Amino acid sequence: MKKLIVLILSAIYLFNCKSVKESELQGTWIGAYTFSSKQHSLQLPVRDIINFNNNDFTLRGFWVDGSNNLIGEYNPLTKVITTNEINEYPFKDIIAQISQDSIVIETELDNKEFGLKRVYKKLNDSLKYKQKVALTGKRFLIKSETYNDTILFKSDSLYEISSSELPNLYQNWERVEFNGFDIIFLSHDIPYIIKGEKNGVINLTCYFKKKYELQFIELGR
Image 1: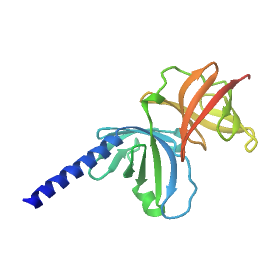
Image 2: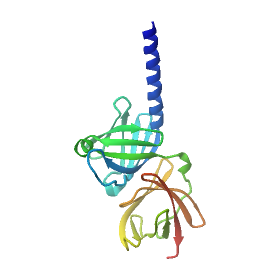
Image 3: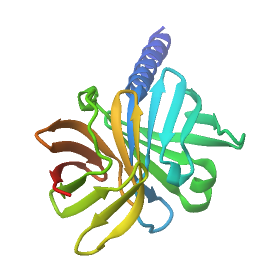
Image 4: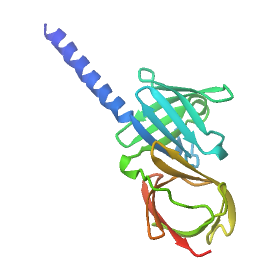
């Protein structure tokens, strides 16, 4: 009888642990960085945003990286995400780790060959901003904790950034709305989340190893 009680209690405990993990997975996550478990590698930005709604999975990526809109399913038993791209080449991702504020995803082939994994950070609904903020055709000072650059959004897909290290560098960018979040994708950078605007100052949040707060301060042309 004691063994039966122990087994029942263990089953309840495991079920509750699993339920907590699965409930933590629900919601919207933004790409942060990559890392390798097998070898030293550069920690590169992950430029996409994903959402889990029960077992439904959606992804919105940066067109420069070759992925735009993907839909698929998540299997909570195997931890596998299966999607089909428009060109019908399927890929399979595995959720290797879940916590309250981050998840680690690995693609089968990349993990086998390079140990490559992608880290995503959980987004709170407080970061949603419903007012449309104009960017195209405007120049801003990027004010952050560690640097100040100047960025000009020349068109809907091209921007120019100037800094002491990268003067007059032209790159691609894209702005997307995903589940109420206003996201800016920039080439060679982490995604920015627009969370508010007042008097020509746009407040943004982004994630890499930690959470960063920065501002776009509008400048004269």
